[in-house]
Image (cartoon, rainbow, N blue to C red; front, side, top):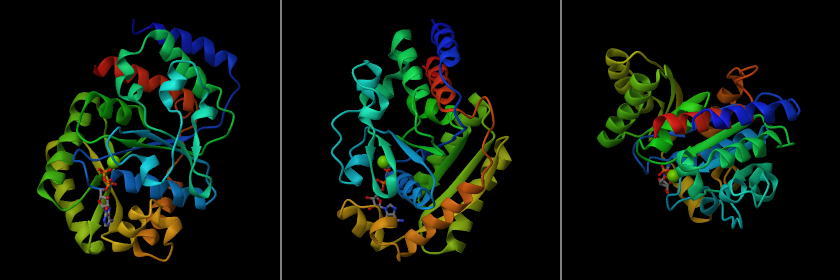
Length: 290
Ligand SMILES: Nc1ncnc2c1ncn2[C@@H]1O[C@H](COP(=O)(O)OP(=O)(O)O)[C@@H](O)[C@H]1O
Ligand SMILES: [Mg+2]
């Protein structure tokens, strides 16, 4: 079974035209409510404002979806692509600064249960995407379910969001431990969210990095902080991205800074760096993890 989507994908790849590489970044945290969706959306808007072509993939079916956060009302989602009734361009909705969004779908969390034909259909849909992308940002669910592990394993870069609460720290550690011990993921970026200042964020990072580097074979990179910001909450209530709604706020400044860091991450050249290869890796990861 596991070979079927690969064979089909290989065939499809030959048919599709070459695309430029894309940075695929998964945002994860272990614990829920630490700011993953806000960070995914605002990092996306900041990157888009800096001229990047950005696509967000909502891989969390939780209550605060990306579309809710941005006041969007998508008609279709990835499920319609998987069942073959819509193309990717039919389901993608546009957010601030030209940001593109793939709305959440139940199929996304049941990737391993799809048939080989559905897997191949998905790979084809992504390989046919004509618009060039620079960054694909994935908002993953809370916890360390198979689906979260598959998305993070398939991505090129993983951002772990933490805040200064014991449960956030232990859950982030559990996520990093699982990815490192079971799947040999070695590198993680960390964003400290809702801290009062950079020192507090750095101390929080040091706490996590110390245990991770002591007990696991991993390296952690401190990306920076997003400060606790009432303006961000105001933007959430208005269903707007704080980067676009309150660009003078301190959280917007932090997102702009973090986006610049992402821009400097190297792009993985052929062949792992392409969108359809990400989907292929995602399917492979789902089949292995399930
Ligand atoms: N930097 C911040 N400052 C203030 N509030 C924040 C910040 N980041 C997140 N929040 C609040 O935390 C809540 C949960 O954030 P969310 O992005 O939905 O978390 P997750 O996706 O991890 O569950 C949001 O509704 C928002 O009000
Ligand atoms: Mg969320």
